[in-house]
Length: 425
Image 1 (cartoon, rainbow, N blue to C red):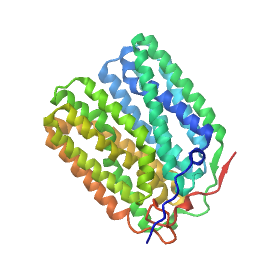
Image 2 (image 1 turned 135 degrees about the vertical axis):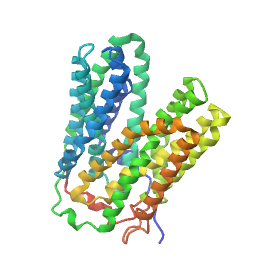
Image 3 (image 1 turned 180 degrees about the vertical axis):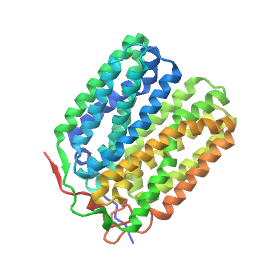
Image 4 (image 1 turned 30 degrees about the vertical axis):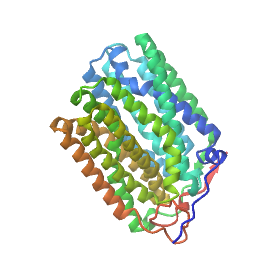
């Protein structure tokens, strides 16, 4: 069957699909505030509160893991129709986390752990709430582009915030406290803007029991595969610094350069590459393809290491392209596969699998790296290829009857079923 490529969305259509101008500004402000604080939370605990590195790191890990416990109730709340309110709530939770962080006296590990936990809840809740809002307001043909545009805006804000914070770090502990306060103010402003959008979705009258079995199996496969896929997000932050600094004995500047390159490529290419792929293949096919690209790049790192840090940095480019394909298709595929009554719970489970992968990947990567480069890159490549094959078997196939626009989920009923009773003001 011949597919018809949807026309490229105009900027105005894209802004409307992502939630409107006010919501787009809220995304940018929230990302900027996050960039000011999140990359330097460990440094805040050590420098401002005088905590040990081990205690600070443990508190942050506990916060991330504990934040995952908020996913089930968030999913049920989203399924009752919450959209912009849920997004705003995730931002307000982080405001509370910053307040606790600023209130923590020097040497108080308990309050720092409490702040890390509260911030972790907000950080884990935001992606699912944001994806549910976009899935509600965006037409199916614009959903991939809207999600990609949101990610590009977020990465740009994170990068700008981190750069600004880096410039301010020379001010020591007072500067870190000021950065935390500004970050909290940003979260508050973003929450007010997001809440003002007032988007809700009327709960569907149908029940999830009528969802096609094939769709349920495909969704479960995507969620399991996502735990492996998400390791790619920690490759620039964990795996490559380990290889560059401890194996190749290169300057830490190489690690920073790879991270900056990754961020720039994501900001610049997330939207056009997502649109290009969606115009040619189904979301499931793109997700499976991203796994092949990522696995190939992992093997590329193995082969490039003997040639020095420049070769490793060059291989990070196809790795980032695989990350972009993954990020541009995974969330959109989940929103397409999830039956309307459980869209919120499906997105919450997706974020749960993402958080689980992010939580365990540093430990797994460092343990494999200690064994050797073949163990590290070979295991990552094999696991990712396995996840890609699983997605390819269950989440791809012919475009459903009645669907001729390229970029569909290619499984289950038409995706516009996920637009239950949108209400906005």
